[in-house]
Structure formats: structure tokens, C-alpha cells
Image 1 (tube, rainbow, N blue to C red):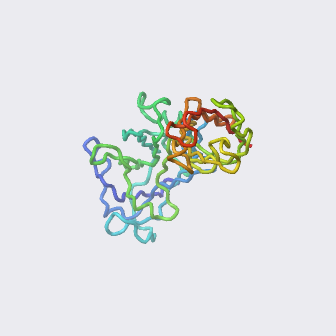
Image 2: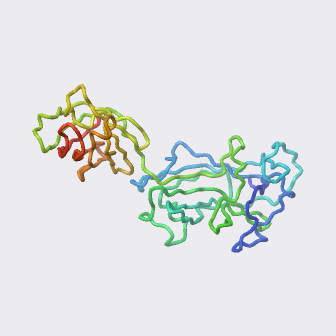
Image 3: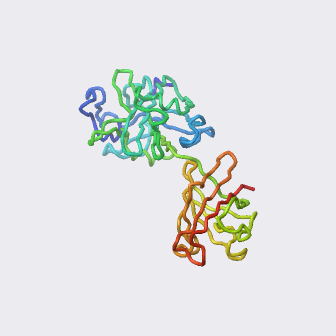
Length: 320
């Protein structure tokens, strides 16, 4: 299918950089009003993110095809009507490079090559080691991945006449950037790049049973076990009662917390009385992703009201 496909060079922000072969990537926009561009589609097997907590279970899967029904506008930057006339010729595409840009949470950037396609459409299935292996040796390792990193995948093109258009070029500040005009984002059904964040799944909302483990006061001050709920999403949650009914069953006081990559962080001020009932998180606060059990280790801040100051207690919530 590659012989008839022609590539459109639209909106290249940088024609050439100091470290690139100018003749290899310089094209005249007026000579290429129409051509082909890569289109990415994720499959149902694609996780949509890189799971930092389980790099052995990273599943990325997408298909790559080329579209040749796009047309740039007269300014060479925006898309035009997309009408085909069949009379424009340009160097046929010989192969397609599936390229990746790793942007670290600190802003550092590196590029790599995942695969070179000589036929399309094609489906690529990748794991964490496939991404790491796309870069030069020593650039990236499993333990160098951090929360907030991202991988951007796009396509570069090698033409039969020897010219090349890379997927990423060097921007004016000296860092890699995608080579194609963002105006393509407005083309219906066209996805010219994919972005995968390094993060952790979090879905803790639901009904739980709370049970006291230990306390610095008589356990009869608490109700255990008792039903509780966790509401929220995306790592930000509220527990319906963080006091284990210390004020009685008709006076629950909520506890806000976050879960990021299996780390629980309690918000000090309680949901209902943030300046009077203040939680201090202890080292025994944990989350077990295998069982779903969350352990809260709490001491009330010294400025808490109502005789709470200094009381320490530990309890678990177990999914129902």
C-alpha cells in the first residue's frame, strides 16, 4: 500500500536545526499542498498509561495507518478543504519510523526509535521494556521512571528519493519537539500522536468495613466494626467517618486523603471541622493493593477540640 502514498509537510516549525542535515528535511510547502500523514488508533488492549507500580504489567497497543485525504490551506499552516484532485505527485513513502519522546517530570527530554514500518496498516504491542529499549543504552532504565514522566509517540517518514522527515525536530530552545502542525488536531478522526503518562491507577471508591486495631484509650470509645464509605476518584478521596464513631453513630466526621502509587496521605483538617478536629498521620498508615485494605494510623493534633488532643488510634477499612 505504500507506493501511492504521498506525504504532506505542513507547519514544520523548524525547517532545519544545526544538528540536522538541512537537505534531508527541507521541503517547499508550496510544492506539497497534499499528501499522507500517520494516523494512530489505540486498541481495547491499550492501558492508556504506564503503571509505575507494576512495570511488569504495562500493555500499550495501537495501530498505525496513513491518511492521504488531508489538504493544507493556502497559508501552508492550516488545513484546507481536503478535496482530492489526484494530480499532485511527491516522493512516495518508503518506510515509517515510529518515534518516541520521553519527557521527564523535571523537563528533560530524550528521543528514541521504537520500530520502522515498511507496510501498513500495522498494529504494535509494547511493554515497558519495549519503550526503554527504544532509547540509546544508558539513557533510561526502569528505576529512572518517575511519577509525571510522559512518553509521546508519533511517526517520521523516509521517502524513496532519500529524503527524511523526522517525527521530532529540535526546537528553538534546543529541545526535541513534535515536527507537525497542531492544526492537524482539528482534522476529524485524525490522531497524529499518542501520549502515555507514567502514573498509577487509583480506584478506591466503594463500601468498606472499619475495624479498630489499637488505641491509646479504652476501645469502648469507638464503634468497631462499622460500615463506612469512600467517595471520590482519581486518587482524591473522602472517608465517611475518620473518628470511628468516637462522637457516636449520629456524628460522623469525614477524613480526606489521597492515594498516589499506593501511598496514602491524610489531609490534616477533617472534612467537617477542619480547624477543630485535626488528624495527624502516623507511620502505620498503609495501603495493600492486593487486598484493598487501608490502614489509618492517626493521632489528634494538640489543637483539636473536645478532649481529642493526643488520642492515638489505628484502624483498618476493608472493602466489602
